[in-house]
Image (cartoon, rainbow, N blue to C red; front, top):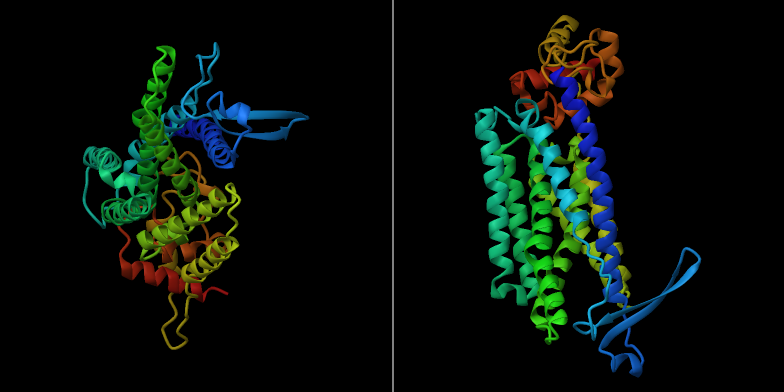
Length: 393
């Protein structure tokens, strides 16, 4: 019953998280595009305090959008705020982290081959790292470094790459990537709660009181919004990466993530420039070439079957499968937390194993399986099982 409840919660929060994330990312992309696409307004609009405007067409109608330099002459009766998309995305993401990686810590969070941790220790370490990373970011963004965007971006990139390495030393490979994503998501939600919303509330207060708004608040909020914009594509990649062990299971997984994340942010930069009529197609070309290089880098090495080596008996191969695979991959799993075989893969007979060897070999090569190495598979056993699978016709 507990495993079924975990699956239900996993499904609900994942579904809710994706919906909220689509709403947040869509709003973020739209407003960054809007801000960068504004053009100089006519003189009569300038006299009203309008900084820029644009026209667009969508859904069968024309839209005129204008942005004030600081604030309108008087506060409108209806003012739309954008915050719950961000908060809901973070809350559902944390709920998903709790259901999968905290509740199922032994399967997904802890890798006993790296460091021996109890469930409580692993969860505490996870929370401490996420909180600590958020504190470091807040210290940086409130420092004079924020006035140097390129330097700030470089420092943040190095810190996130270091966090990817650190998480990889503490947690399972899959959990390491997820924690980098959780840290980025926490930073982004923190930007909304701790920076953007306070600045917007101050702007509203000043306009309502008939005061001249302080432009520094608006500039600080815009800087945080820009940070979120560049972090979005790397975060989306991390959300999808748990399906692809050739990334997080690589021997240099942290570097793989750093390279892909950097390329994604670089591609995002192309679109931000394009919105300002600054077309730099070489950025897309460089990003494409970079990703092709990553694909070749991640290509798993084919299993080389040594013809002179003794043939591994089927009994020995199936014994390894029984010891390290069948607790999950049977019609009725005995491993706590599973009510059905993961991905529907059943490995009870040699024929079933042979049918899945193309999927099993990469999973074993990248240390994706067994999950969190719960069964304590040794490197020798891993190599033997891979060799046996490679011998199969």
